[in-house]
Image (cartoon, rainbow, N blue to C red; front, top):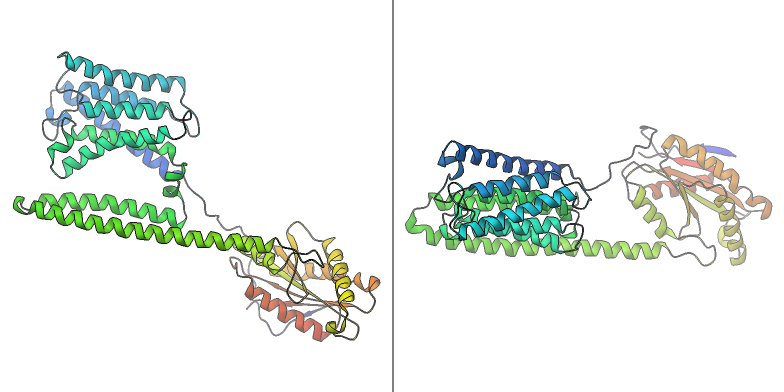
Length: 443
């Protein structure tokens, strides 16, 4: 065996190690931070309300309007805060947590019964909307892990009334918040957000934590929506009362146009994703087809192998060609060509490693793809493969084997560039003589 280095290619050597590229995955780190931030806000509001009731400072429990963050509301909020803090990922509700949520329901119902009888504790009362939100939140958390769809639906419903109340304060519409104070609205939204985050693995919310283009778009749109609400509220406060109705109409029109554009944008993402998956499905189906004569996978499998593993580590490509004694493979009969192809594939398949795959190209040449191999290692590996392939000379006299090898760059998932270099190396090996290996080094 002789090894010929190609002078027609240049190669800039890099690291010999095949470093693994980070894989796109979902992360829960941001979810943990949001959860503890929401619980911290709830704890802060409860402490402020307790100090306001203890020291008779109305500004601490009723900062806006006449609605009050009442004592029963504070008690239910503290119980819900304790129960939410005990939640663990992928675990059903414990007995202590269930007991705390049961006490939240008892406090909410008991406050309404006592208020109907004319009994109140301290300033203000727990409104019906607040009581209903606590009950929905508690039922949603109690049924987590026991029911399929109800827990998420109940938790989302628990956020509806506090969100409407918060919008009422932002846009100065008392009919929207009624007896629910501003701290109560924020507190209920914080508790509902912390409880909702245990459902982020559900299909409805999974995209918001993904690193895919859809996940990033969903997070940006969510932030834009929050910004739009805040900007609209600020705009309504600086506009004179005589023009507020007209301004509200323009805000509604712009919101409708924004929702229409959002629907089109999401439809575009969904259509692109559908086409990509349809293309991958077709490519996978084509890759699984085998050549009827040799039983080998076709070039589609090589492209799929390259697209799957090429982004994480360099890929080595070894092209194997065989010729008759007279130097022209086209003069071989079909039976002789198929026999040589089967014998060559059997000899090479016996020495392939788990990181290698053998496929058949369109011109009856064998292609060996090697995962995670550096440019310094592929030359020696191709030489050992050539030694195994030379067993063909004993079973089929007059048939010679040549190899052309190339190595892709790390992160390159396209099969074409490295294949072109390997084809050039194979042609040079065939011109140089039989039983040769030529290594094409990437520029």
